[in-house]
Image 1 (tube, rainbow, N blue to C red):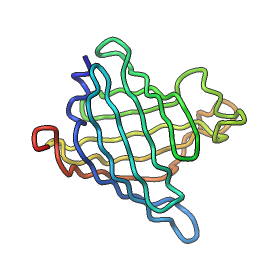
Image 2: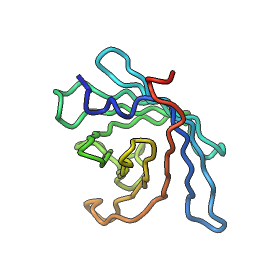
Image 3: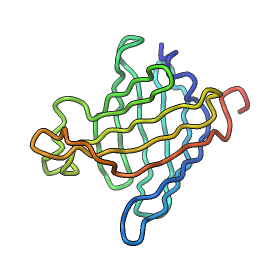
Image 4: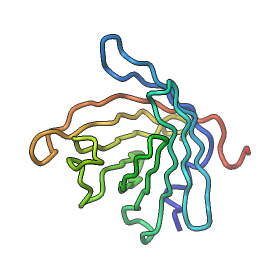
Length: 154
């Protein structure tokens, strides 16, 4: 199970920039490990505006979109779905998630990451969906990840 996501297991360092005046430089230390049939993804973000997170990925049949249960240091919980299709890693808000509700960010969200051929870099971006249906996508912030170690080297 979760063989599709096996290539993400390891330690990663991410750097990005949140648009603003001035732009906010962000970084994240990310660890992705197996827990039985699931993956556990932990991030520690800098500066303090970037929350630390814990996500549990898995539970659907192999080759189907996988649920991604997200929790962060602000007390936020969200349900995303995620796929790895070739070199493209996609994360999106699960159907039925109320992104406009009291616990939502006020916009839909998705992550699109393109994994390098050698598997050691992910060029990614978080996007926000605006409009009534949340389907008018714009860049929230770019973030790129570089592999620090894989499961084989840890």
